[in-house]
Length: 157
Image 1 (tube, rainbow, N blue to C red):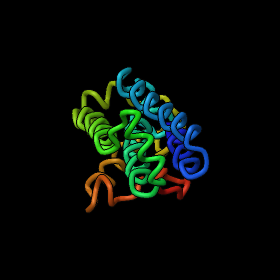
Image 2: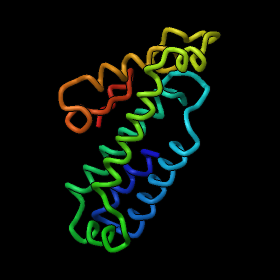
Image 3: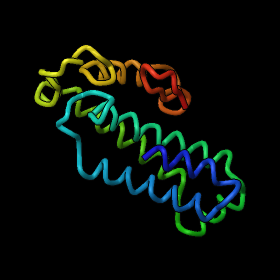
């Protein structure tokens, strides 16, 4: 979803029609991710619960950045088309929090974590994504002043 929100941010000052299409796709993917629920593919960042949490959190960050830095004409277009950026930003982070709250029950984690992975001790493909998510969420400034990072890649928003 975030490649589309990043594209919306990139195109916002150059091609507002394309930017709105990308923005809409990012929101739709966020809706699908939340509506379909948590994956039973494990706790990892790579296609697991940790990744869903991180992507929804990052979407909230991107929406905030668009609301603060996009051109006034693009923001006016989004508003005229019915987008409430503050609501969407907060909704995305709220969804991330709901998935995190679900992980606080050990029975939930135990039922979904991968126990036969050869990458079991990896943050990206193993079981350590959730503790790293907790560490980020407990940092001062969460959710909007703490950067969203993809572990191991040094990519932060």
